Structure formats: structure tokens, C-alpha cells
Image (cartoon, rainbow, N blue to C red; front, top):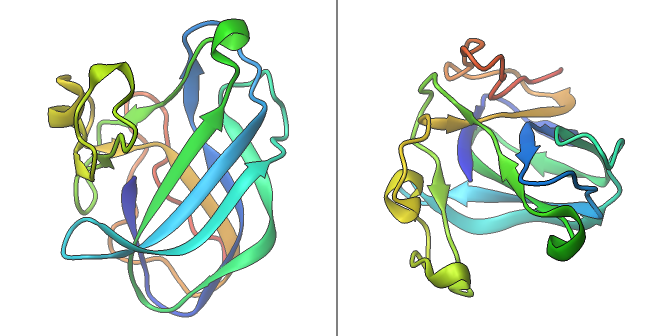
Length: 167
């Protein structure tokens, strides 16, 4: 999950998440979650969408229209996405990082303890995965209403936009 700031009432109706494959995909769907901020970590779930149909299942940069809007008021929130892939056929989908730092660093959780990796609850992504990724993750949220906060990033060396608000 990665954080973003909303400065006024805003309705999210579209998501795009930059990623890559360990094999070739395809994505069977996209799961999306938006959480309230809980002191610098994801808190209460605000919106969730499971099994979204992605625009192009073979493209690792997954995008989808939401079936209903995720309506938010001013504040800090966390966005999380999971690319649904049949491991034996398509491998794994990885959410791409971003080298620009905006707000809190990204967080990760592994509630089922898969692959013997800890972090059963939210923790610092780099620490959880014993790796050195960028401080943020690549995603775009589209919608209507509110404006962008002070944490709008610049394009990183990877060419990933962490957050764009359309209003």
C-alpha cells in the first residue's frame, strides 16, 4: 500500500497500477483497496473492489474502471492493489516502485505468511521483503471532485507516476 492526499471531496472511478511479470501473465483480474490513514500506516478499509476486469490482461501495467465510486473527503489515505494471476500459468505480478518519495514510504502485509515471508500485518515494504526498492509505488487514481494535495510526485527515472488526481 502507498499513501496519497486528498484536499477536498473526491470520487475515484478509475485505477491504474504500474507493474511487471515474473513470466508473461495474463492477469485474471485486479483487486483494489483504499484504507484510511492510521498514524502513517493503512487503517480502516474505506473501499474494496475484488476481481476487477483489467483493460489489457497481457499488459503488466494494470488498469480498470471501478464498478462504483470510492468517495473520500479531505485527508490522507492508502491505496493497495493485487494483480490476480494463475501462478502456474502466468507467474507473478509485481507492483513497480518509484524512486521519488512522497509522504510515507510504502507498506506491505502478508496475512497468510506465503513463501515463508513474515509481515503478517502492515510493515515497511523494504524491511518486510528484505530488499531495497524505491520509497513509493507506481499508481494513478482517476476521478472527479477534490484537488491534489502537496504530495503529488514527479516522474521518476522509471517513468512511473505515483499519483495523479483528475478533477
